[in-house]
Length: 158
View 1: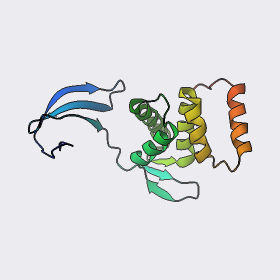
View 2 (view 1 turned 60 degrees about the vertical axis):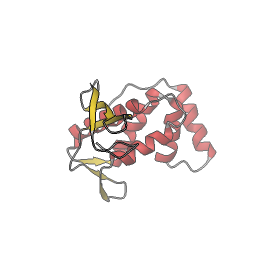
View 3 (view 1 turned 30 degrees about the vertical axis):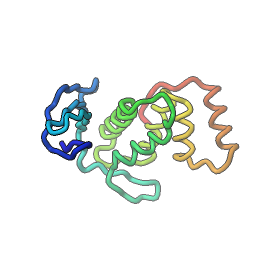
């Protein structure tokens, strides 16, 4: 692993921790050249996952793209990257068991929204506004009023 400070590839692992779900490993490293400490994360690579878009197009699943969208929705909210990773892992695991390697984007978006709704309603509304393509303020208001009327639903398969 290359040091982010001096670009050396010589380092040692100081600490390793496996996530609760067992699908990521977080490693604390120290550069042997400059002594800088940094963290890396090892994630299971999901080869061959395809997302079927609403218009029928197929594109390769991009964890980075999904992470960026959720992070934007969670901006300045009390949600850490581990929670975002867990949302993605849980959703993709559930959908992969149901749809094999071709995940409908609708099911992916619904699964993410369902988990965000249970975790943080502001992040949920932000994500939903992009996913559902809200066109005006009244659609925001309708979504917000639906949140106050109904307690978060238990997680079910979309």
